[in-house]
Length: 218
Ligand SMILES: [Zn+2]
Image (cartoon, rainbow, N blue to C red):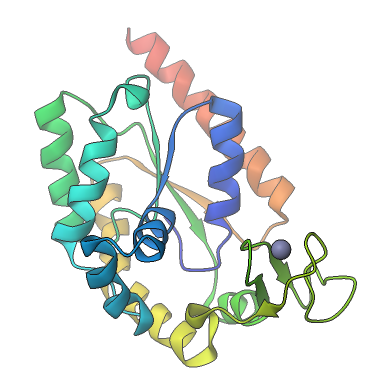
């Protein structure tokens, strides 16, 4: 968990490589559906273009199928889901049904100010989605992708007014989840303002401890 732009996507991908577990990013699943113009994609796009959350039943259907597949037998990493308390309850129900449990909920925290700075500077390659940042990771030539020479654009959901709307949505709908998971002793907080390597190290340490605890419990 974390606000948009907290770096949770980057960290999730690192974890995926280290733990060799399937990684389910709601954003990717939804963007793929939008690109392929599936029925789910068409309905999701209307919400995403406005910076709104995609309705629970659309997302829960897609994620539930993945968790239930054999590739997720040893575990899985979720990114971008659940985002609301009702989604968390739906996930709980699904996991109970499948005889599964969440090991931990990792919160990568970042201030609104930091979020605006990070997302507002993001530039995405039109052709292949390579991501740059005007401040932290600028391309060699402004507006051009280093990898394939495609044009770099500001993605719809990185536009300033959409960022502000996403933050409002996060505070209103997602923050209650922090309490929800804290109450179940699953929540672990990480300071997202630290450098990505430091955040990754903190996550590694945290998961190693959790694994020890889990092994002792057996
Ligand atoms: Zn590119």
